[in-house]
Amino acid sequence: MNSDISKNFRSPKERDFNELASRLLLRKLGLDVIELSADETLPEGVFVEDTAVICDGIALIYRPGLPGRLKEVDIIRTILRREGLCIVDIKDPLATIDGGDVLFTGREFFVGLSKTTNLAGAKAVASAFPEYPVKKGAHLKNFVSMVGMDTMAIGGSGIAKDLLRQMEEMSEYKLYKTITLRDDAAANCL
Image (tube, rainbow, N blue to C red; front, top):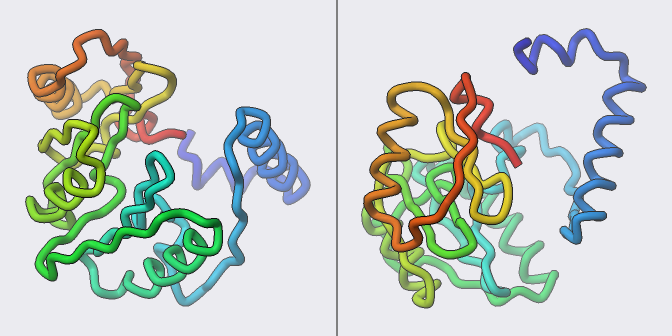
């Protein structure tokens, strides 16, 4: 069932319970959860992964390909700085990067090139995290996500399977496990 439609069939009480359970589960897994207030002027603001990547205490602040998203980046930069992270801003004014194009496996980064992420953006990831290999490919998060240590969820379409093949050819680590899902959208998960 489409998640947008299924939300309409759940009561507000059920939605509140599911949101609380999700936050508690993330905390139990040892993940820090920072809740932000909604800002109706930022319709894309729910996609906070699009604004920065954090690895080993370093937050690389992205430069979005869409100028209307710059306020989101400024908000996230302020919050991450307040949390004590080392902030790295992309210096190249032509570099653009969107979090949906970046996949960190725990061993290496894959950066998809798309309408919102260019080669200069991929190079910025490599520069910020030189201890990890950075591989360039197609837009990623519509087709693949990490779901566990060395385990990827991959969509079932031909595009997703071709993307996985490319990632396997580029990867320095050859032992990733995959879970193939019928729908590509299901692979975009936390």
